[in-house]
Amino acid sequence: MSITAYYRITYDAVDAYKYIPIIAVYMPEKLAVKEMQKMELQSQKLEMADSHCHLDMLDTASIMDSISYGVLTMITNGINYYTNKKALEISDHKHVFPAIGIDPDTAIQISDEDLDDEINRNIELIKANSSRIVSIGEIGLDFKKASTFELVAKQRTVFERFVDVAIELGLPVSVHSRDAMDTVLEILKEKKTELVHLHFFEGNVQQAKEAERLGYMISIPPLESSKRMHVMKDVAIDHLLVESDAPAAGKTPKDVEKSIRMIAAAKRMGIDKVAETITQNTKSFFKIHGRGLMRS
Ligand SMILES: [Zn+2]
Image 1 (cartoon, rainbow, N blue to C red):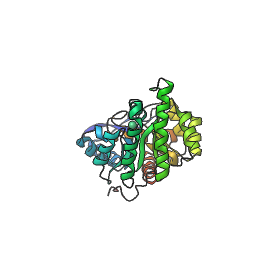
Image 2 (image 1 turned 30 degrees about the horizontal axis):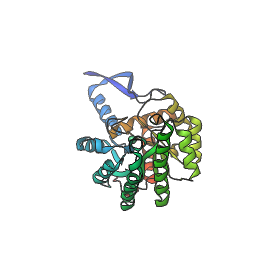
Image 3 (image 1 turned 90 degrees about the vertical axis):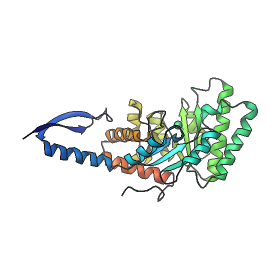
Image 4 (image 1 turned 120 degrees about the horizontal axis):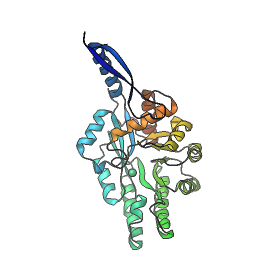
């Protein structure tokens, strides 16, 4: 009888997303292979959703690979006029859905003279495609990048214009916020924005609880953070989404599996249940029920 060392895949409560081979069990080879296949099957069965990525920067092969891996719903975000148009082009409305906006980094690169025109032509693009897009994004504030009062003001102008359009059209907003969480929450609250997706959440537990109270969705990127671990533990799973932000944080949408594993560890829940709930959250928040194909 041949013997094969077999590692059970498990995860540490803190270090969730790493496969740690802690139990080496010796069993007959045939049985080991069977067990391995069972585990593989389990991970294949996960249907996942990526609530924020930039697919215009990925090749078709990586997108197809992500779909066959189980990421059946992806929301690709534009950041300027050019990538907004690309987001519309590459969306098949089966697996890939577009979000359109001007991100804070783009906002500060637009000259004062061009600002109004640039905002307007993107808003026209949104209005012309309002039934096709699932969110206004990527928009937001990034005080790490805005070094002067003028640049902050410019980011705010752009952000507020797009929030207003989202409210007008009844669409969600996908919000980038770096070193600006309080201001972002303040603006969204002031405008009584209801459909809010806080992408790449970097806030603390208190800010997360405030967002939860307001009915917002908190999005978990595939990057390690003890602060975010507390957020994932304390915020109800109904208010959580996952994202790869590929190719910025994750390499491809497949990396949402890391976020799912982190949530599973933080909440002491099964990976399957987390994947199922988060996928459902994504579809109902972005109203893509029935449009995404369920894996048979
Ligand atoms: Zn992004």
